[in-house]
Length: 244
Length: 372
Figure 1 (cartoon, rainbow over the protein chains, first blue to last red):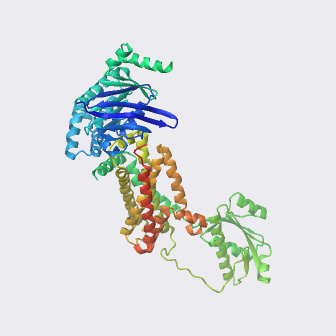
Figure 2 (cartoon, each protein chain N blue to C red):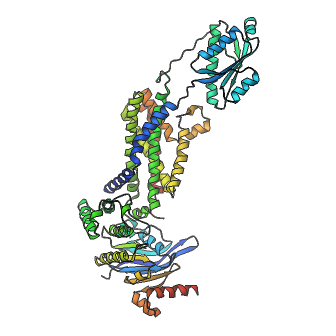
Figure 3 (cartoon, chains in turn orange, red):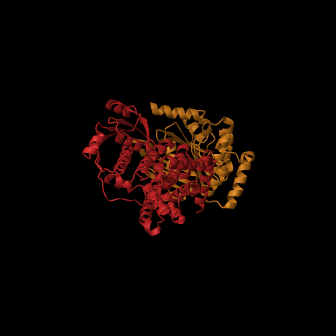
C-alpha cells in the first residue's frame, strides 16, 4: 500500500513571465485521497493539467504509475481518469451511450462494457434514466455519472478538477461517498477544491498559494501546526501570510 | 480500429440526434437543385426595349418590328425624343433603346449605308454584351432580308458571304440545366461536408469534451479518421441522392461511368472534409468556424468555373483556381457526366486531388494537438 503513484519534483509551468506553478514537489500513494486546496488562480488546475498530459511542463520531473510524463504520455493516459470543471459528458447522448463511448475508447472489451455499464447504472440508481439524454438529468446526477465514467477503466489514479462546483451539499456528500469507494478499490484520487469543508475529507492536503505549495500534511497536522480549529482558518492564515 | 468505430458511432448518433439534420440532408438538395438549376441561366429572355423612330419610314418600321418579333425582346418603351429615350433607360423602362435617325431610309437607299444607335443599360456588363450580340444578329438578318448588306451599326457588322454554322457538342441544345446541375451537385456535397466537419472539433472545444478526449488514449489519427468518416458517408449519400434527383427530374445525361464519379468524389471529399477539420482546429467557437468556412467556400465557389468560365479569368486568378478543389470536381463531373470521359481523361484531376487530400489530412492530424 505504500507504493507511490504520483511523484513530482520541482514541477514548474510558466506562461510567459507568469509562473502558474512554481517548483511543486509532492507524492501521492496508492489509494490515497490527496487534496489540492487554494484560491482561484493558485495554480491547482495548471498542476492537474500537466499531470494529465494536457499541458507540457516548463521544467521539473514527474512520473505517474511509474511512467515519465514527458516520454510516456500515451501509456499514462491508459492509467488515469480525469474529470474537469467543464462538463465532460455529451449532453446530446444518453447515459448508456456516454458510458459505452468512454468505455470503448478506453479499450474495454464488448463484454466488459456491457457488464460495467450495467453495474454502474445500478450503483448510481440510474436504471430509469439509462436511455435519457444527459441534458435532461439534474446537475448532481451528471457529476456523479461523470465521475463513474472517469474511473470506468479502473485507472491507477483519477484527477478531479473542482468536481463539486455548483452542486448542493447533499449531492456533494454522495459524491464523496463515490470518491471513498474508488479509493477503497485502490484508485488514488487527486482532487482540487476551494470548499474548505471538503478539505476535511481528504487524506492529505497541499495548500497552494500563488503557484507554490505553502503547506502540506493531513488535515489534523495542518490544523495543529497553525493552532486553529478548521481548514478554513488554516487557509485564511496562509492567505493572510501572503498579503503581509 | 475499434476506437475509430466508437468515435464514428458517437458522431453518427450526435448528428442524427440533431433534429434539423435529416430535413437538411433531404430537403436541401431538392431545393438547391430545383431552384438553382432553373434560375442560373445565362440566356437572356424578354429584354425590355424601346424604339425612337425619328425617320418614320417603311424601312425603319420594319427594323423595329423585326425586334418586336424576336422572342428575346419585348417592346415596353415608346420615346418621342432623344432625351425621352435616355430617360427611358435611366428610369429602367427599357434595357435597350434603338435610335433610328432621320433620313435612315433615304441614306440606306441612296448611299447604301445608314447608322442606327443602340443605347444599352450596361450595369450588368454580361447581360449588356449578350443584348448587343442579339441586336447585331437581328440587324444582320434585317440586312439580308432587305437585300442590302450595308446598314452599319455603331460597332460595324461585317457582312460576309461565309456562313458560319455551329454544332454544339456534349450539350447540343445549349441547355443550361444540363450544364449547371453537375456543378450544383458538387456545391451540395461540398457545403454539407465542409460545414459539418468544420463545426465538429470546435463544438467539442466549446462544450469542453475535447479535454476529456485528450486525456484518453485516443490516437490523433484515430480521432481525425473517426471525425471524418461520418461526414464522408453523409456527403456520399447526399451525392447519390442528388444524382438520383438530377436524373429523375432533369434527365441529366450519365454518359460516363458513375463508379468513376463516386471514386473521384471519395478522394475529393477527403480533401474538403480535411479543410473543414483544419478550420475546426484553428477556431475557438462554432461561430468563428462558420465564418471562416463561409469565407473559404465563397472564394472556392466564385472561382470554381460554375458561374464564370475559368478561361476568362485573368492569369493570376487562374493560378489561384489551381488550388481550388471545387474547380477540379466540377470539371471532372461535367467531363464524365456530359462528355463520357474515362479515367485516363481525368487522371490529372485525380492526381492533383489525391495529393491535395493527403497534404490537407496530414496537416489536420498535425494541427490537432492533444498537448498544449
